[in-house]
Image (cartoon, rainbow, N blue to C red):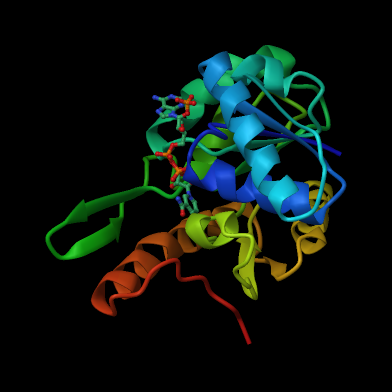
Length: 221
Ligand SMILES: NC(=O)c1ccc[n+]([C@@H]2O[C@H](COP(=O)([O-])OP(=O)(O)OC[C@H]3O[C@@H](n4cnc5c(N)ncnc54)[C@H](OP(=O)(O)O)[C@@H]3O)[C@@H](O)[C@H]2O)c1
């Protein structure tokens, strides 16, 4: 499968790219608003994976070009940019494509991070509103710690929750997640449950801050 990571130059993009490239046979394409940045990031990620013994192809393009011919498109961009990012690549999206959104609506103050959901109800719902007809949206990866993903020597042993209205799309994303050693996908239900899933992100940030911990993930047992 061809997986485009839009905003793949950022922290989550890096973590997902090196794990997918190192653990799976999926084709990883880095997207950016700047094609040179995408190209440089792809080179850097490929070098990281090669240092860990796997020679893989990772390419980088401007977001719209990265989306072209992708099967799965991950919106690894800030929450307030998701709708504009979908609009900017809509011409390259085809029926049957799956958009994955890891963004959580959140604000911060002196007390910590707090869920701050858009009027659509969740960022996932916002993305679903922006997605062209025939393109399915899955909320996932919200609670994956980017730093731990990017460190290929780090053990994972963590879960990610999936929300969305289309079972086929959730199976596609679940299959990709389960291809990565140490990650497990759990179905958290329909898109209407996205707010609960997205709210896990500020919770994890607050627990990390209060306990002087970094890169926390969750494992449901
Ligand atoms: N970091 C984590 O541990 C983590 C974990 C789970 C979920 N998430 C979620 O995943 C998403 C990405 O997180 P991140 O930490 O990787 O974010 P980030 O580093 O702040 O941003 C990721 C990329 O988004 C692009 N970007 C920035 N401003 C933009 C704009 N106005 N329009 C379009 N693209 C823009 C940039 O790429 P270019 O400049 O190259 O276009 C940037 O490299 C966020 O929604 C976050 O909530 C993060």
